[in-house]
Image (cartoon, rainbow, N blue to C red):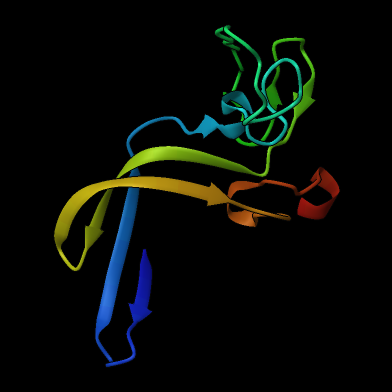
Length: 112
C-alpha cells in the first residue's frame, strides 16, 4: 500500500496487485538485450528475433546461453486500487540493494 498526501491535503491510498509473473526487460531488448547484445533500436534487417529466458528466480535471469544476469528492473500487468476505485495497471518495478522483507541481497551471515 502506498499512501500519498496531495498538496491540498487529500490522502490517496494506492494498492497494486500483480496479475502475472513479471517479465524481464533483458528479453525485450532493453538492458543490452537480445542474443546479439546490441540492445533496442538497432536495425537488424528483415528478421525476427526471439529469445527464451528463465525468470523464475526473484532477481536472477538465465539467458539462452545459460549465463545468469540481474537486470535492474521488471514489469508486470496488475490491478490497481486508488481510494476504492479499481482499474488495470502497467507496473514497472526496480530495486537496488538488499530488501530484507524478501531476503533479497542478504547473505546467510547477515541473517544470523
